Picture (cartoon, helix red, strand yellow):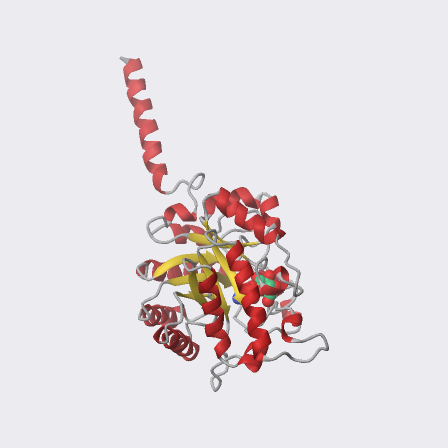
Amino acid sequence: MKQLILFIFLVWFIVSCNTKNTDHNFQSNGLKDYYASYFPVGVAISAHALKTDEAQFIRKEFNSLTAENAMKMGPIHPAENTYFWDRADSIVNFAQQNNMKLRGHTLLWHNQVPNWLFVDARGDTVSKEVLFGRLKAHITTIVSRYKGKIYAWDVVNEAISDSPNEFYRQSPWYKICGEEYISKAFEYAHEADPDALLFYNDYNEMYPDKREKIFKLIKDMKERGIPVHGLGMQAHLGIYEPVEQYLDSALIRFSQLGIPLHITELDISVYAKEHGRRERTPEDDNIVFTQEMEQQQMEMYARCFELFRKHKDAIESVTFWNISDRRSWLDNFPVRNRKDYPLLFDKDLQPKKAYEKVVNF
Ligand code: 9MR
């Protein structure tokens, strides 16, 4: 009799452990599993990360990747006849081997752009025709190489101006070609891979002034038959940002474009958001990740993901910009060498409090 009771108890114990663990098993489930019926969850990475303990971690948590820098114009195409493929290739191979989605980032930007594109052998600024020729060669070469392996490309990045009385950013692209360079980039990419989804990608996108400019840019391109298929909302946020006020309405507004939305570069800085680089001040020294910051960040992440889930019909991908607090671009922006803690995992790759908020819904 005793043995029978012990046996029944054992069976009950095993069954109940298994049931409890199916939903919130931090050992085997990753972000991608909690969000399996919503959208792929991605991360921006370097090729170097794939040679460290981060590789296994990426496999566990994410099912989509973006190259943080490896596919940008400067890193991949530093001189007219030189392409550096190694880093980009290793990210593409990793995505393929692990059955992950891969977003391409980015075919045209005003940053990390090599100067050779804009000047001739004498150092004079090239004509619009020459620049279009170079842009076409660049886009065709890269998009063709990864055809069928990269399902979505950020074609043009950050072409809209932040200043309220200016529509387009006054970049070398704009100064040499006028606004036409944007449409051209989309056409070249579409020609090279007609199956790839082509995105326009920008930041500060939830604020009404910029939001409306982005909306107009995409709407006009669509009306002119330019192959723009999606909008990338970067979502570089800070813990004090008025997300309630603006994020929901931006998602509603952009949904009206009738194209998929990708959250492409999500992170939540623990500092008040600043948009320009600045010198270090004494207040930037000895900063620690306080409980207050942790709490505020947790609430912010919870709110954002609540909205992402609400808009799951429009949102087809959510990507974090960097893996963990071990390293983020925000450690050097807006202030060089000021540590930030913007992600869901700490420097030991352990989930922070915000993680639990994001996966418990
Ligand atoms: O994370 C990227 C960082 O390593 C680079 O130094 C930086 C160069 O400007 O670009 C960062 O990524 C940017 C992305 O490509 C486009 N949106 C803004 C991102 C943060 O600056």
